[in-house]
Image 1 (cartoon, rainbow, N blue to C red):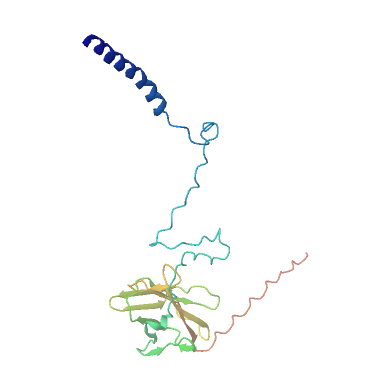
Image 2 (image 1 turned 45 degrees about the horizontal axis):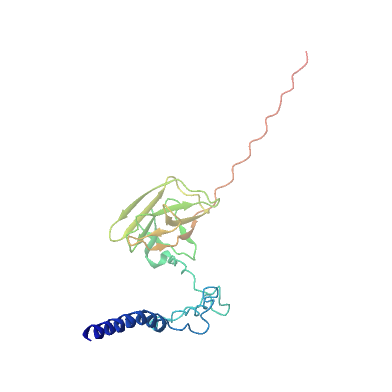
Amino acid sequence: MRLRHGLLLLLTVLAACQRSPAASDAGGASPAPPGAAGAEDHPPAAPPARLPAPSPATSPVSDPVSDPGAPPAPGPAAPTTATPTPVTGILREAVALEPGGGTVTLAHDTESVVDPSAGFRVDLAAPCADARLALIDRSDALVAATGTQEVGATTRLTLNPAAPLVPARRYTLRIDGAVTRELHDSAGKAFLPGSFPLLVAGEPPKPQPKPKPATKRRRSRR
């Protein structure tokens, strides 16, 4: 009796073991969702890409090329150059030195009458190492002369013609720069050239008589 009961128990266990793998195979497989068939042939569409939102700390800048209504971008600033100052801004005195020790004040807009043997002196209120004096005749040619230059806290220029000036002849005393047209002070400030019209005192020299042409002598016939 015990043997029969043990055989029945063994058969029951074996039957249970045979049903367990089938049940697990049948119950473990999950049904495929609708539309899963052919998923490899038709992959799902990718979602649209999103542009990054602009940072609140920066404001959009309009591009003149892409935005026709945008104002043109400002170009580089043009270099500014200082306008030269008239030399009268630093002129202290301009005089003609007469032979007897007297002086004649020279003016820019008025013709000054000077002695034929006069020299000239110009004082500036600033140090101008490149300033010079020149005497110009009526044909705009330089008159031979010697001069001096004294530069300190101020500037003093002198000019002495190499020969007496022609009476009743007009000249121009000019102050300008020895390197460029303008003269400059020690700070680099530029000053325009200045001029003083002159008229030499005295009567104009009499014209020299023209030499008579030489006459040919006739040879006498023998």
